[in-house]
Amino acid sequence: MEPKFLIKYFVFCTQIYSITAPGRNYVLQTVTIDNERDLADIHVRNGLCSSDTIFDYKHGYIAMRVFSQRACFIMKMEKGYTITLEEIGRLAYEREMMTKMYSPKYWWVEYEPADSIIAELKEWLQYGDAIEALCKGVPLYEVHKVESGINSGGCAKAGIPDILHISICGTVHL
Image (cartoon, rainbow, N blue to C red; front, side, top):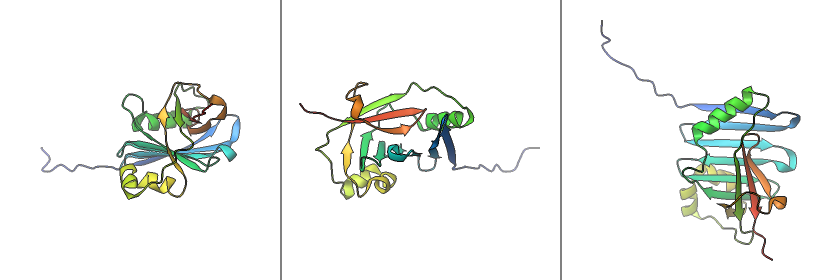
């Protein structure tokens, strides 16, 4: 007997992963994957090294708010370089389930300390409301990727520890 009708369910799902770093009980990482809004929201609570990072795939930007710097750093996503939303979810799940995990993903990005931008309405529309909520009210810097290890001593850290490390380095002019 054939069914008379077919019901399709579309599930918009949000997954939340709470990750503790092995041997570092004072570090709390929360990764939220919002498939409906096409974004990942990462919170790292680690004292002075605390940060929030948003991967907004709908608008094509990554924003990192580093609390010790009292600033936000924004980067345009690049194909082939940016980790996918599915990868973030998979790696966060694996990291939550496993006690140790090695990730070879390191990003080095650079910004010009003297070039903060004041975002106006058109920039916030371009960056999206999630990034606006994260970055509004603090200096905003555009960053671009650079080769690894540049000026590594004075870099701020963001990203997802043990999964994706992002080092944000200011340009030094001599």
